[in-house]
Length: 376
Image (cartoon, rainbow, N blue to C red; front, side):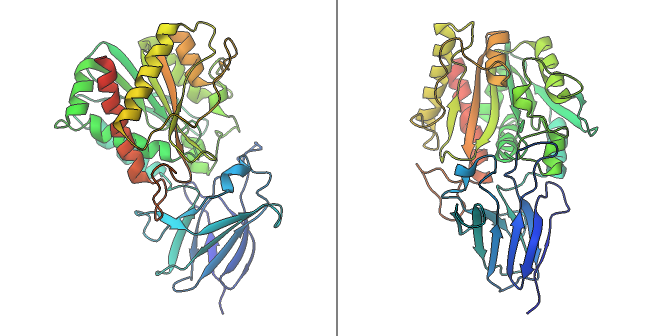
């Protein structure tokens, strides 16, 4: 029987081949460049129509988040439009931690990924379409190490300054699916949520903070191996030009409300992380965050407040992280939105798990909650 073929030489591709034997393959994930992080994978298999694939990704005990592999099913697509899940299992004791993916494709090509990818080409389409909408201004805030633009879209006539930004960690591709949903809402002249926010706010939106890492198939870092969400206290052009460009733009506009969009590898839920522990914490600022969190919990069953990260002790906030830095620097109501790589266990979907479609639905619910938050 002929061997299948596997390749990852494309936008956001990441896998190394150890061996292939018929429809069975042993694979490894490459580290982010100049970094200890590894977790993101994205590759295609061909020569597989009607054959039961057994794909083993090994050496995962030293991945960035080994707990992320428990109860995780790989994303798979045969048309690169609809992504469902391939049955997968994790064994810590096999080959230093092995994820085994089993899938029988109907067609000759199948793509596998840690989460449904959001390509740089789709990013450019998203930005161009939004920039062509009435009342939307495009800005390039700066350039990445690889010379890619840090794209920003601004809109609205109100006084409340809103910043929404995503994919500081490039492998968290659900963040840009969320952005697609948000921009569709905000740029639709018939959408009452978008219309209201544009009347009451001035919005600045960065759909992808880390285009280099996204294209290179990184989980967490830029082209220099830097975790951007640990650079917000002292960003530099040498290490983190992306953060420097965004924070400088924030300094020019000020910030009243900010949401940093992410994905979490281990926790099978949608949740918010706040800015508890910043030196300048006030109860009024904290109540503003709690009010938004309560509104979102009421508006969508995809959001909950029982699971999430531990609350930071007073005065112990890490100001190198954007949510803490923005809250401290501007007195803003700032937060990190986390979505799962796995599924949302509160409302599971056995076929797709957490999906691009649900990211987009959640974005509209987040914006609708913002409307209500403004009127509280």
